[in-house]
Image 1 (cartoon, rainbow, N blue to C red):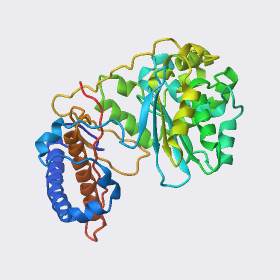
Image 2 (cartoon, rainbow, N blue to C red):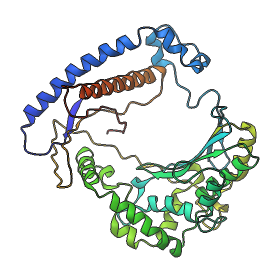
Image 3 (tube, helix red, strand yellow):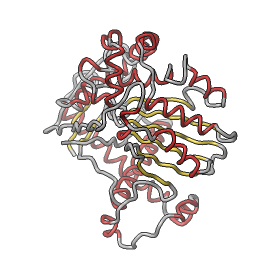
Length: 392
């Protein structure tokens, strides 16, 4: 692992900072590992707290065989498949919490596929879906969902990231037809978002306000950080929030072209999990979403879906130092990052590695937080985690 980015205000010698941080990390890691061993000494009692674990298949007693034991792409309780237009669906019945369901539309594209003149339009299109569609006028989607107890923000929301756009609905299932109507809303997002000049002009103000909010001290430092971390690749050039001039001046026609190109059925997934009849929901998904790309009106899609581009994060030779200051920042922040190749979940062994690493990071962060709360402890906040993005 190669340390590649360190943010610290002021001019400090790298070797001194690096040595001090590494020494502290080693000491606290040893302490955290001792804590972990004490916490899991009674494994039977720990497993008993998770009754669903007993439903999992038995593993070989030889850990070396876990490397070749492939993981299933979906839970055993879930059903999944492809519609004739290539749209993927996943449905799972889940009785807890009662009378609730979570529905997702996942579009396999985000800001990474934008051109320079399109920077930020994937995020704008996400906003427009809640504004108006072929069947819903003037934020009627928001009003309908709120009328059934699904408030905006907490139970109806969406986000745009670098490589995907995700719409989420958390709805009740205690009345007949609610899940059907919620799935219809997802279908509207997928195929029938209305993108007129009037709709766009109304939504620009909202998106511009979000852009301005992202330009605070933390936001500016994050841009410096991502530019240092991903220098030389598209990730640092395509932040999902976009550019101010594009948000102000992009045309509805440009958005419609993007929407037609990338909101393709074969690059989408519909996921439904909740307290419902799984076969009924599966049938409804097929009824609503199984539309030939060329028959989607008024914005028909191409027969063949677009390719998902591969933008790797380049490796960094040696140690890279980035120092940033901001007059609005009221505290100092240091980040030590280590790049390494992406580790996919393809086997039981790889999942065990991920789980072990995640548990260690949580225990380590908890231990560091505990130290800061001691009467004579440090007055800094420490945390650690692992992010997963692909290297060359």
